[in-house]
Image 1 (cartoon, rainbow, N blue to C red):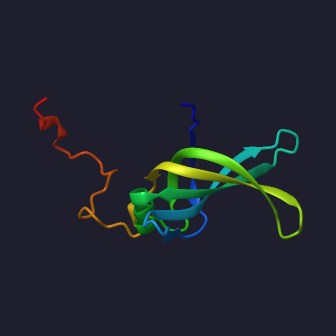
Image 2 (image 1 turned 90 degrees about the vertical axis):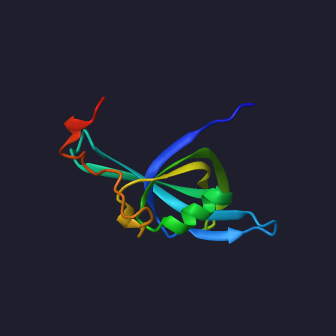
Length: 136
């Protein structure tokens, strides 16, 4: 079996939308903007390019994304990407990048999305002052 993997890190462009198929399977759709910046060598001006991905997360992963993600939240999505052609409102050919998520990692501060499970545990808390007392 051959498959490819794409990893994107970016911010949600809109709140996720959760729906259920007639079979009962959850599907969560959201968009992720991945921006890159650089300085133009000739003009010395800052430039920015944003690439948008339409993401779908299925099953329990989709339900979790729907519960904890919100517009602006930073995420890392791992999955397979496919380009789909379409005709835009101006009648011109265009393409979208659709990413079927296998894994979604919530980045940034949990307060970004109101996540409060776990008693306020902070993954990025500094080590305790008495760390030297650990017996190993």
